[in-house]
Length: 597
Image (cartoon, rainbow, N blue to C red):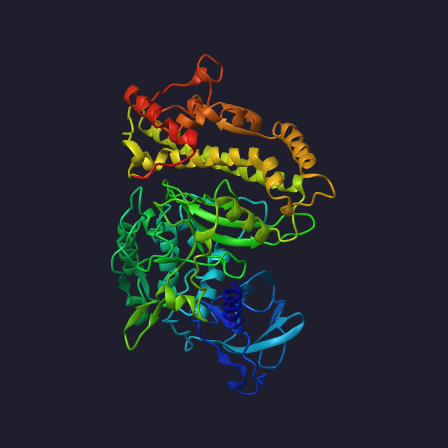
């Protein structure tokens, strides 16, 4: 264990530079009449690829070792140019700023940490200057990727972030630092509508396309009840390293990628070598934005941002996911959204993309587990998560998110808010199904058999909610279990000298009061609004065991009782043969365990 932590610290200390997201930085000492210290501890990412005087320019600095405090820019005469910048914690730490139109020429950019200048670089504006492609995944490009993901999905707390697909987000220059990076107006009509399993691959390949990086992916099986999925040899895509890819070429590649990858691609065994993703240590220093979480049943999330704990607010970890209807949503990471369990059918947990590095001229190599274990360049391979029980896994994640401990009521409020967020996103899913039936009033969506209800294609995949409803049932159980968790892990909470049993009783009473104080509103079949308190929603848990079928009206899917006024506006029922199948599958939802295909 001591050697493991020494190796981990050695890996982290190797990240001693602040990285430039263009992969290209000219030392300021090389610029005429612009002296700069010879300490290249910071680098600059410039967007677009060809910064020109005719258009705004964006800058970003990234660090894996320094908390950045300021970025400044000076013209040739030494005049400081006013900047408005935003910064976020790390690792990796970053500062971003947008410049107005600058005259062509050279500028000096300085980067500061705790008031001290730690590095400076030359920024060249002009049509004759082009940032070169990165070409290779390394410690710099991995940090660039993390910073880009964090900025793409950034939003002030508690603002929700939800989009009908990835397309509008990538077309938003305020969120997407790589918007029109190639200068081809390449994002204007890019067709990108990834679902759950496609999302991490789509984000990774989009970044590779823009930055001139190789990408690899493998065809995989779906596994069985006794073994996780296995994959075959990787397909290497190196076209973007050789020339600037057009939107059409990237579209063709992304479609090919979507045809190959699926939920099994991320559920591979933790000790498997032939995989696209590999397990990493469960530490704050290794869980960067862009890290993938694969749950044992096929749902996939991408980490987006850490929010540090403060005296007023608990720490939070944000992630994003895609749904079968292609909606993209940012959500809190907690036990209700992050399912972890020990099962022979999958290798669940936090994973990173296996790097693809140069191995000679126009030759590429996918790193092995052994190489990643001892690498100082990449986040190390680790089987740490394989040794964890679910209870220990969640306790460890809680400590990482809130290292200073939690006030019990603060912990409850955070869990309650996360549950409400899940309920509210379910409203959108059911509304989408209702919109479908308004356009197809006589249609009936075919229902798959068995475990296929969780993974299929077509309208059932788009409008049913079996996976979402199972996660909702789990989230309700997790909130109910918080008092017992305080008894199991009192070290996670500030008990102020009280016995865990006394605090448990306090939270139980707090729950009874609090759950009635907030409500949601859904749209009934006649267009009227129905208000339900969270207490009413939670009280209908048994109804959600058979409420995922889009052929049922919204009232049924929200648990309205037959004969009630709420139920009276229902105009649609699933066919009897589908209701019979749902009755057979109900045990899966009662046990909150998704079946293995």
